[in-house]
Image 1: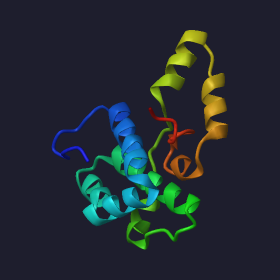
Image 2 (image 1 turned 45 degrees about the horizontal axis):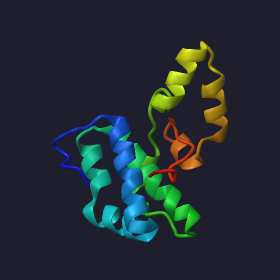
Image 3 (image 1 turned 60 degrees about the vertical axis):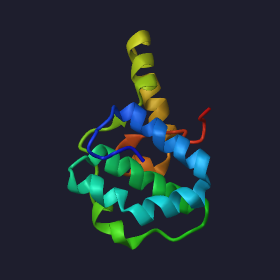
Length: 128
């Protein structure tokens, strides 16, 4: 995990999280995040976008691996971003085609755990 004192671009943050999941595997990633308490550290720094993304990833991996959610973060789960956050790729397509159809499509395809926090993320497994 990147040093929390050096906040990085959100697209890089997402990429690093997805690569970490691929490298460690679902269970290894879950263990490392839950043991490190990274979610609470991000929340305490008020880095909500990163905090919610990481918690969404944890919740998503718990669901797909049929594991219970960690109740320690129930208070954070009651919150969400004020406005939807789309990936840079989706925003670029919308700008190029001068249409919101890509936003609408990605909203329909969004992973529920991410959508819960108003983060519109459809594919966390497609990393090189």
